[in-house]
Image (cartoon, chains in turn blue, green):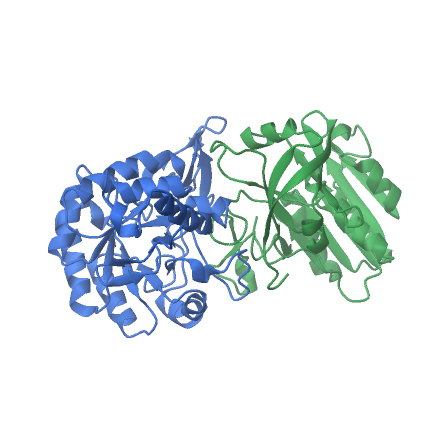
Length: 302
Length: 267
């Protein structure tokens, strides 16, 4: 079988293959002990970072539901300066393509973060977490066309890096938000973030999570995510990173066929740390068996 | 262990026993994992290939058998995952990820240790006891439970401990008092070099008080729901103690623990 070209260019972000971790489900440490070489990934992705340290939500933070995981972490983190000093060097060592995910309490914080990170070497792109569904004190930007456009435009003003806007599924029409991001000048769209969800303990008669509500991820949301990627791919002419319950190469290929040019893998990698490696190999094998010579050929075929 | 790569592996079940209603000891053959395992560490286990249940489940090592290449976990059937596990029999396959977390380390020149636990909190203790025996360390055991049947693996502990103190809430065995009162009595005339506790907030609190009075080295082994077990999901956070310079800090039970100095964490 001849070698398949797995590389992809996403609006200025060049990847050697289309598979990367989803923000918030992946971390690297000084004593990195993952059972594979992270250099094989298309990119590595940090947890969403804010300007300042955040503690996150009250415990418990996670619970399992049918074929899914509900989390209400509340984006805990040490703040951007800690990331730059302590995390970035580890991520840079782990992969040549590092994407930093940024959060923000309002448009201004995104801009300040983008400005700060633009001066930092070794960051390939920024993903704007516009849609985190469990920050009670945040406005969810990706629910509003105007705010989405404004946030992207303000970030683009100060950043020279490719900008990814991560969209929320918790909207009436995701294509309208995608268009708004496009008007703001975004380079890449990623979708979807977790779906608003909750669980109740019938013994205590109370919400399971400390924050009461959270975001659902995992196989349970895959068909929802796939449809939204398909919708956006048919509406907006921008590269898309598909996210949502991707657990194996078949799932990933579905997203590519729906119109995604790359995929992020989250919950599945918490259960099987090797899954991204298996997905890369699986896509390559599928393309070869189907007689394609490059990944690009199957994007949006469905 | 710093830098040690995680092992993800399929392993065979050697046997499973229901020791009392809904409480099981599962023995698994996995030389790769046992070779690296330290008492107090844990594994993430999955006994299902479908997506429901979805996540692996964390289990501490009940006993380690490095020569045989196997280990045991002790668990209580509480939900979907452990229900599936309860049907496992010899020859069945499970998927393991581990060994995870930090494990215990005896302080230098340790001569005597105490283990203090309640109910299913006994789960990591036999592995610690075996390790101590191997090093010629004396074991003082203090175990409590709601009723005498729930004094799990009591016989094994009795065989290995220099002294064993028991309390049960219904006084079906031993007295119904606080098991830490016995520990306090011991401390009055015996130097205990390290105390390990698991399974009860109340016991943890009492040991913290004893630590202040007697200057103990004491550790708590925490259990928590986890999605990954290796520090990625951040779901197993626990609060660091405010009065220990950790104001507003969280630890991850999987990565920073599950063994913590007793006064570092709030439970």
